[in-house]
Length: 546
Image 1: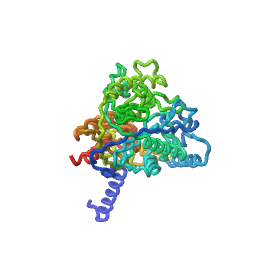
Image 2 (image 1 turned 90 degrees about the horizontal axis):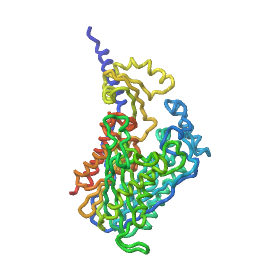
Image 3 (image 1 turned 180 degrees about the horizontal axis):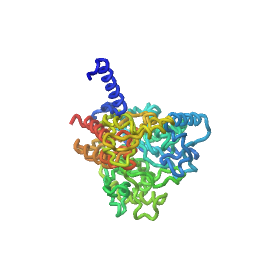
Image 4 (image 1 turned 30 degrees about the vertical axis):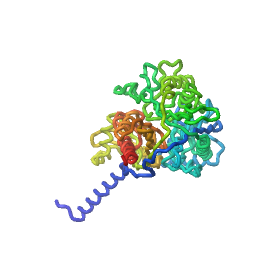
């Protein structure tokens, strides 16, 4: 029987609304938006300065990084899920605003093993804007910190593309410095404005001290190779145990250092002596486990201390983490697995590997610089769990035909709906893959992330500093280095957890392979490729005139 025109119209309208609803439920990444940048400037002489400031808070403020074990005190109602859970989460934040209690969900620190610091490495080219590398002993970065620091040091002619603010990723730093619900709930605890301001002021103080102490300098690159795991390497691939296809030596073995040396005699130091070292390597600072209840820079601080001790004059060393998403510390051959002694042991191993390369490096006293920043929208955040193939479930769940199996999951979803938890959904895909999907739009409202590339040219050698807004897996880091090499870079420094925080950034392969890094990549399997694409676009810009 033929349908009436009215029935056909209704059918088409219903189909259209179903299509719109389906599309609205999908992640909607946006194009690359070019931000600040500067073309390669003429070669200039320059100064380098190093500054630091203590940002260790009073005890009882929350320890950030680990969200379980002895670090976890409590959860909001329904773990913060659903209407009731989100209400509980926000009410607890309101209580925090007027409370003297310094920690809520996570354990407060009982003291500190070693100071938490903000440390700055500043390059001041003659007649040009300065370039600032600043690292903080934090587990993740907050982009609002970069904004606030720029406000405080506005008189120093700093621009956003010239301030590279990175977290060392210590899991024993302070929390309470991020307003978004997801980091507060998982690893940072409720926001405290005094902690945020202390961190921003600490960065500003370190930067000002670096400006004040800057002196004529040369810059050089020093390189060393990490050893295999069985021979006492610094790190290992932490997924080797759980995944048969992963080897513990699957990692980026390159240890890089940007070495600043004096070009003039000073009151206490001779020309050619070391001003400071920017050390770049990928490793998770999780040597101190979740039962540690004291503030500490963890292995990041130990690397700085031990390398500094090994060098003539004990110059300051600043550690910047790399693509450490799946890379953990290696304890093989150490007397103690974990703890401060293991931190020191890894630091000593690193010092032996890099000492000669740093001391013997030959620098350049003229520099050229170019920068390019970009932002990109990544769409709606989500996580999912499935007992089968992650790829099959992901592709099946996205397919429009999966709405045909939706009625079959209603009995499983009814308990969630009854509790007002609409962001959690069990799903049976059209290709009969089962899983649970959790949408995080209400918990991670920031879906637009900052990235950038800085190019330094020393003589004929091009250096790239790629700013990654989270924890990239090591294979993604190697891909970025390969791209930079194609553009003409001799050396690429990967600055992880830099200027922004988008959680983990797994490569597409690692995303489908599974593991913690995959599940904590919040924007789907194309997250890694989109980050690489954005950084590649920035590289195009800094090399555009050559």
